[in-house]
Length: 201
Length: 391
Image 1 (tube, rainbow over the protein chains, first blue to last red):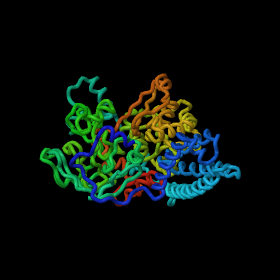
Image 2: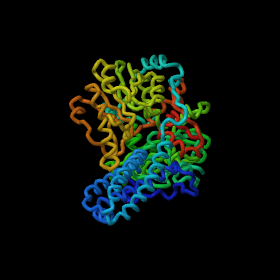
Image 3: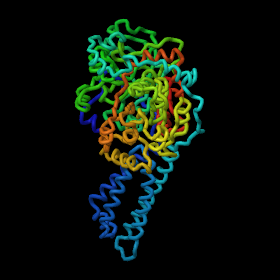
Image 4: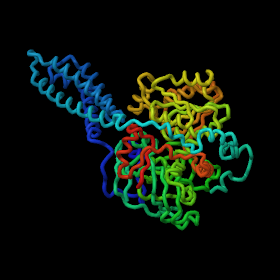
């Protein structure tokens, strides 16, 4: 959503602190990999959507343009997920997609396909990407798994030093003050000219 | 100085930055002694709230010691004063401040032209938040400049630990306002969606305001255990139907008062198809927020009831059942917190020992561990509920 600052031409104010030296990021290596793979997925997906016939021609798999387009849509969806906070889902969806890609390419590795060398090359590339996807998916899953560290429960943290019963008893003596009432409604109804909060500041 | 700086989506770093300086006569510089990561910081972490810039300093829950004041502060603060800084920057003079509607102060948003376009009318400036609310540097830092410092502060006495008063700047009054604007009656059932820090404060506030029964909805055992400790009946939405359980606990009538302490990032579960649809739309920028909790509250709330929304929403939501809302005659109350409206009363309650907000703290670390704690808090690892940072 960084388009908003760009469109609005906003900038930090002159006197605001400026970064002198940057420290380590909250993004881990697997998170960075997810970003790269996400953008790669979107790029590949767009290519598959826009120019499927160039891809099928290069692979000798004419007639499968519809399938390539569908795979393009899948790639874009996976890419968006990889770039979102749910990146693990995006990366695992890419791994599943790699399986589909490999199966589809294997079907083009026929003796009668004059472009079978290209198919073999594409297979090797997809295998390489699959390894990266699996590494990224496993890395982010481990890094962001919820159950890291011992699970603790907080049954002893009431927040009421005198106990819940005392808190409930105190509530019985509570009477709403002006402060608890909607102030605009109060001011309109009372017609009071005295600012409700003038004294408190 | 050291500060936690936003560099992009999920990219927070502990950077060395230039020290803040007095820019206006009403400014003060505060040496931060404690600050915290808020649930709404995660919306910025995920870049779901627009208009952040790389280099922005995070943080809007902080307190510390005044080390420098401008001459326009007029004696209302002096060097050495110990203050909690409310996350809403207020002038104390405009019509809204005079009415106690501090979060919509008409003066302090220095990016008013932008906010006017986006919101229709600008709201108050906020620390460490989007440039839609002024883009003021936040307090997850060693020092922070407090604009309009003569009004934007809560003085706290020595002798009370930071941990007990720090949350006067945001989550305690936020939970309190959520409960207070429900107009709780002694016969009321109050249902609170979300047992994060604000939800926990809302539960305690509802108890202190006299609710007959408080019900807490979440799915994380550690959060539900803390809610139960505070007097709420826990409902785990992974294990039971929220609507059925709420009806069961209210003789089929539904809770009179419902509090949404979740906001724009409702949990996505495959057996709640609307949450999956919202997530997909959000990813494709067809919808900015995921309002599952709002839909559920409107459905289950007792006719004539009140829906209170302290949870942050940033923009557009889809499929809100206006028919149910209108026909059931529900009242919606929401808004960023008018912090200073409540803090005198809440500080008194802390001093009297009615409540100790430090119960919510699960992690206390140094500022340099902040980036890692953002991740742990977001991923809900290590039973993390509230992180306090010590610069």
